[in-house]
Length: 538
Image (cartoon, rainbow, N blue to C red; front, side):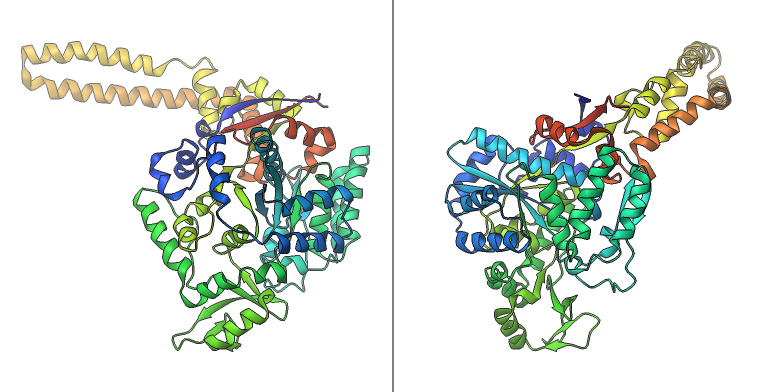
């Protein structure tokens, strides 16, 4: 095996918000905002509770079957997996993500692996039930700038589309221009066997399909075809028909706006920072292939943002009933939509996602919709051979990898050079002056301020000496300081944690399919650690 790993507690890395670390530590302060603890005991309770909430399994089955047939991905194995959704003893565990170019950053892979592994672990714990991992495609999002690029070896490769207005759902975009992206990627990937595998994967998904949604589905299917993962595009008329009554209440009663804001106030009063804020109406409308926000005017008419198109309330509600496919939930309503159409037990997400889910519990309760177990995804940092060499050369241990560059350098200067222990020097000076202060007090109490002032001046002089010695040590160890900077850049490329920046292809080129297999074999869906994945490949 070309990979090994060790783990570091997420809470000790200093990378995450107080809200997320409190959630990891099962803080009682958050009890009001969750339904079930993220544990096997919590899932046991969730399974019992989930049975009280009906799901239209027939519509769900038909919709997923049709999507797979349309994309020519329906194998006998997948068909059998989808058929399990008809069984009342079958539950899903879900993660969602944007349609990032060639998966985008590494954590996209980590989210899906965590979700698949969670389903496996639940099956082991509850063998009389079925658990299906689901990737929820955010095909209706319209922020093209967030999904049109990826980073390979720190280099940005971008897909440009001058004709994109910024309002089209990314899922319907044509794949025109992606051949140029592949040509640019090929320069970074090289000509190895693994590079050829990546090129074929890209061609099969992006160059042999019509739109971005289909391309993403083919790619995710190709990467995880040996698992029981199901891929769902929620932009579907049959599925949205199941969500009409909830969208109607959002328009007429502003339920999400009221309930989520109440929860935000409570969370902020506990000292947490809110993640997302609801609007009075949390729906978009598709108009001429553009996704426009619905806003309510003072006269109770409804208008598409930055548009002249208006509806009366009756017109808008009739349109909703007649053409629900034209309505698109935003980040506030999308989780509710997910829980209405899926027999879902858990949502697997990162710190930001779980932060906004914690705002939704009261909203879900008011809509009588099952609130899932919130499962943090697995976190990982790949330590390649160059990074390992830098760790060894600098003496910066793994436990210091996630501190700032400045703190890494500070640690090196203070602990790994021949810099005198200036704190010890200051302590000895204070002890000496303590004797002088006592003598001054006994001899002439008016001398004490003078002696104390001299102590202060002496300590300041020591600080000045320390500063100069540190500067001299930095000059003396310039090569090592530069290596520390390189090490920090490997862990935080472009100032961002590696898993949120680098594309999986950077690792695949050295590890190939072994990389995914290692994640499946070693990730634990209930882990509260950062995995340091150490590559032994050249």
